[in-house]
Length: 124
Image (cartoon, rainbow, N blue to C red; front, side):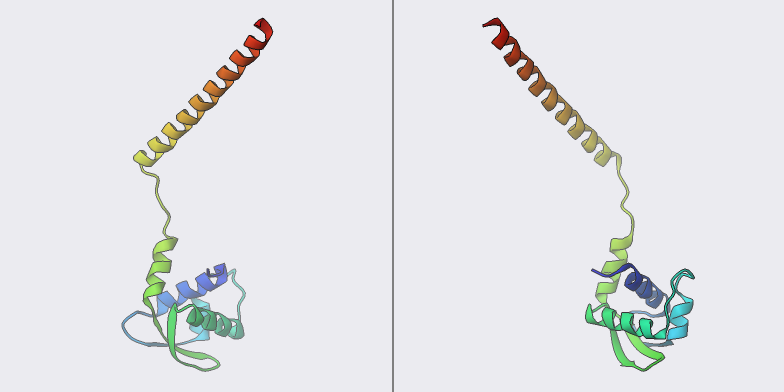
């Protein structure tokens, strides 16, 4: 599992690169595609590039101090698809509602049987 910062660096690399050809970029270009509230420098970008390479999200041809030659892998698309929010369909909402009703009926029947038991103890 990637950290949030590694996911942001991956998103920046997706904006810059492609899966078809190698892309040569600098750490300044990567920093320009990151959100402004993320405080990273070129050394930390290199660390995150190494992490993404280890987890097989990108494939690098060469890595210098400021220059990177990379291509995106298939796993990157899976990571991006996983990030998309799921929507609740009416069928899913109806299933959750019916489950809650079943749970309520179960506890009501348990309470009723408990009250019958207590009542029988007092009568007999």
